[in-house]
Every structure is written in structure tokens, then in C-alpha cells.
Image (cartoon, rainbow, N blue to C red; front, side, top):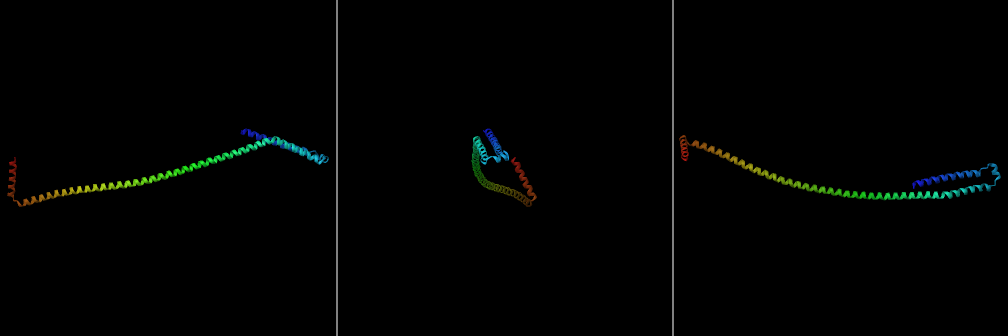
Length: 200
């Protein structure tokens, strides 16, 4: 179709160029003849040939140029209308795409806000859970420390008591030795030996 349009336009240009050349030649021929012919030819005859030439040229241009010119103008109008229609469709599509992108951005913003809100809530609940676990662990550690202190205290008391008993026994033994004489010690030793031998 574009090739046909191009050939019609080229034909029209060629046709108009030939007609223009014919017009120039006709005008030159009609106005020619030298000064002698101008003096002998009446004024109305001189203009009559120019009018006839113009009429013939106008008729030829109208007869052969009307259709290509109308086709050219019609094609040009259709092309402009088609271009405008395509531009309008492209504008509509671009506006629709822009609206879709804006809608998606709104949805994404909402989703992002929900994610941030969820993360904040999750962080707060995790913080509370960690504080609670820390308090429980603190209580367990204090309980364990108290138990360990009580155990160590009992052990220390028992050790002190055992040591005190041993010291007391040593002191008592020393006091008894000091009070009992050598003969009494020998006699107690013999009694103890006799009891041991009797048990055998």
C-alpha cells in the first residue's frame, strides 16, 4: 500500500512539473513574436491566447490532477487520523499501565507496612519472652545459689563440730591424764586387757 502511495505521489509530482513546464512554454510562446508582432496584433488577441492557454492548462490540471491530488489528500488525512488514533490508544494504554503501577505500589506499600507492623509485634513479643525467661533463669540461679550456700553452711558446721569434738576429746583426755596417776593408768590398762582377753 505504501509503495502504491509513493508511486501515486511521484506520478502527481511529475505530472505537475510537466504541466508547469507546459504553462511556462505556452506563456512564452503566446507573449513571443517580437516588437513588430506586438504592434500589429490587437490587444484583445494577445490576451485571448493567454486566456486560452490558461484555460487549457487549468482544464488539463483539473482533469488529470484532481484525482491524484484528492487521493493524496485523502491518504494524507487518513494517515494523520490513523496516527492520531494510534497516539490516543498509546496514551490510553500508558495511562492504564500507569494506573496499574500506582495500584501495585499502593499494595506494596500496604504489604510493607504490614510486614513492618508484624516485625514490630514479633520483636515486642520476643522481647517480653526473653525478659520472662531471664527472670525465670535469675530465680533458678538464686534458688540454686541459696541451696549451695545452705549445703556449704551445713558442711562447714559439721566440719566445725567434728573438729570441736576432736579438740574437746583431746582436752578431756589430757585433763584425765593429768588427774590420773601412773599407778591408776596401769590398773586401767590391765583391766582393759583382761576384758579384751575375757571376750576372746
